[in-house]
Length: 512
Image (cartoon, rainbow, N blue to C red; front, side, top):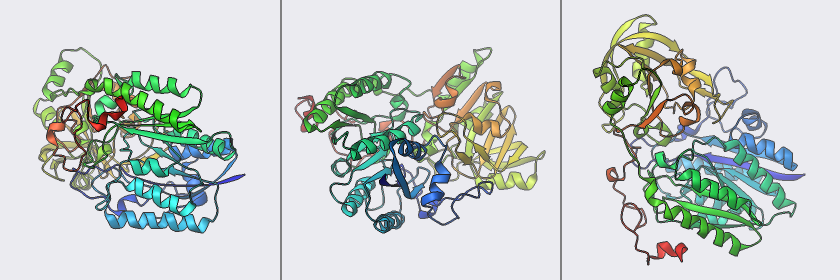
């Protein structure tokens, strides 16, 4: 049986966010109801990690099942994650990297390494943390041991990452409903490589192109057509994987943006040719990635013009899944001022407001300020006189296609009712993409007319089938899908749509 080590350090870094990401943010703290988890302050490994991820629709859950199918002995060394946020403190990254590399050396000889990464982590001193990590692992295991890394669809793939990885396998779908499948694929590819059935050769092509999350959604055009082409290409002889990395535009680094990675069997020329072909297809649709934002007032008018049906208002600008503070107040303020009915705002991360609600107790009416306490980029606090309808520990199990089976925790949570608006206020930043979150606090989404969600696209994984209409909200924030808001200082230039890219530029060499 082949001996394969696995490890993961995952973070999506928004360099425009004001709150840094610390080591404490990465440390796993299991709910009391999950005693098998790692102790607070520790880094789990081995059987502890296998137990945590087994049976979940996660990357690591897929690797576990894929390894069993491929006949691999899987040995997890480390797997840590922090909610997207500001730049990772250099000391935090170096500590985690040190633990990973120490365990890698202690594990002894191995046949392969599977890395569970994001692809858009930035530290105070490193623009390309994943490139540094893959290169460091390569230095330990040597030039011949295969290293296969899984990446988020929003990875900013760099030349360093592609140089030291044997293969890069990114999520196909956004919402990321295929995390489990990509974990399985990585393990099966590793098995095929170790048995000599496949000799992976990787080619990556960077495009001079930035795109924003709402138009990266693979349920919509242009990504639906582009993903179909990628899948068709994967059926061609000699092509093992085609990955479309749409990039994370909220990272001001040189290599932010779209990249195509193709893994072929034995032929570097085939991999390069197919990567260029896919890159040309994306470039030809570059103008189809433009985002349209809808004012809150327009969404409210739409609700009032319809007798029934659920309208979802995506507050992507304050999406904690992209590094925002999750305490933006602009939608809440407008809903309350407009005396909206059957409306929900989910969620606002405000530990202070939760503490006030908890002190008052269920059934109380209190006056308090909600949200807007992290910075001045997401709206000021909203003063509410609200009824405390529910208090909860904030724990629930995800039931949608993204991470099904994973236990999530909002921290202590309160549901406040102000007129016709219910506000879910919690202690922790969390992206409310799974309808299980609202149902866990007694809110049935299909019974409401308007739900505002701190999410850009992931919510579509469970809300698309129940919503009559979805709008991308025109709100402020560090995850606002509007290039005019950001001042890029490190990004390579020229890059579209920030400026036109002349056809003769070397950045467009893939077109020739």
